[in-house]
Image 1: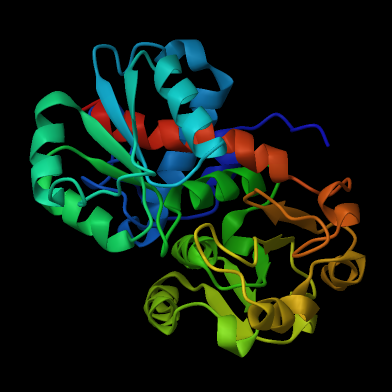
Image 2: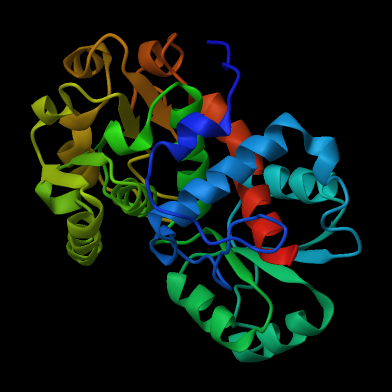
Length: 331
């Protein structure tokens, strides 16, 4: 599928709320982005508008981060996150410094407090991919420069920004869209729930009862949905995907999690295959944050099919992350 020409006007129609912005016209974002719940709907729409501009005219923004340095901390292996951050920061005129913490987790060699107090002396922002979300909370508490969550065990906000951008590129008005997440109610699921309810869309989570999303995430999402007019349903019935504009799944076993036969057996009937996509409808998009395990959570027929947008999602990680960096650091 060829990505259509995109404009910001249709995206802005997804919400009627005014957006706060900086003097440069960029959306006004909070100090840190640890979860999508840190952003309201208008701010998300503002970031997506900015991502569209960055994608369409990268040369215009080529020195926005000139002279700035960003620390990239990785406790987990990475392809999309590392590549999109390093390339994206370079495109904005900034400099990325990689800290590979896979063999020495944050807080092991020295305290998170001391790490944060050091990083703030050298860097303009910190992007971290960690095992435990609590590490990010602590880092943001003690580090005076912005902290960006590029993945934790509870949330994946950059992925959701890229996902919402991808949905818009396919002609969907977010406030009128229905997304069905099928499978393990993990960090990607949590962030997608937060993003969809913030923009006033319809979110359906289809998962086994023993591997559903965190009840606290659902409870908080319902509070937001009451303000935005969003709808949220959590069920174990795959038929609830009927009419969804997009069907989303992720790996059944998250990175660093121990695979168990019991979990695989519980999730077996939640595999996204042609039959499940047919329930959603012939125009339903297929989404996956990657890496994928063909034959496990999704069949090759679906992920390699004409309605799959998985590589558009991967590309849009760069533009979504850059939008936050520009909005936060260009004040």
